[in-house]
Image (cartoon, rainbow, N blue to C red; front, side, top):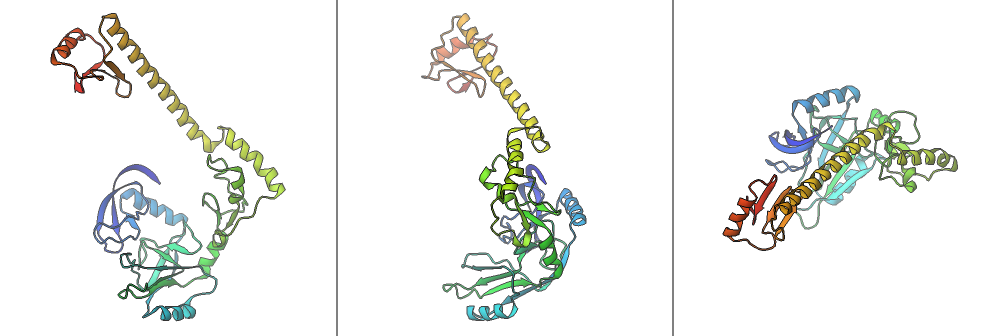
Length: 330
């Protein structure tokens, strides 16, 4: 849920301390914690955010499983450990942690996984989870020891993959263009066909695939699919009558009217202001009108003496608009 940019209160799941930061949403904040410098997800604790999460958990039930954190003595031991415990078919996430790369610490224990936003290799842990709250975890994650960092041992974590986890990744489909989740039997995403960024040769990316396969290559459109989708694509790209475009259309109508009225107002001020000056025989060679501030400035070409400015102030005492003299407010 987007909001205006303002300061909101967040809590760090690593050090459990709160801090204020400016965001335009009530979701997780991934900036470094000002207290412990952790880059884990920080949960917003404003009352609107708490209510949003309550409703979210009603619509998207939590999945419970176990996270196992590990550390081993060497890269070789890590390889052997992986052979023993890594489940076949899951996607691993491995990295080489340098000396200055922050370590997101995990502990072994029960975790509660969010299901409102799904990935093929990772999960968001609920802020209500009994352990590792509000962190992002992977099916398998390993941080290998770089050769130049003898103080950093290979470590990581993995999840016990349950049937419930497999099932939701198989049943929920994901758009390859906008990433929206679909819980029905649709074949193509209907949320981004009218996007101003979507090109005709990208339409096949709207093909929905199970989350478990969402990174797979999407096949091109068949002739029948083209016959169905292309006319709709053209209509959505050229018409503003559809619901998804109405709000933007209304805003653009208002913005266009405001821009027109603002331009008319500025032009009228410039016309009437210079007309007044010319009608009153005021020399305008050293005068300019700044439309962005609606100000007439004398002395913009060269500095004016105090005597000239004094005389101009007298002659322009009835001038109906704002005047400046040599960057000094008149």
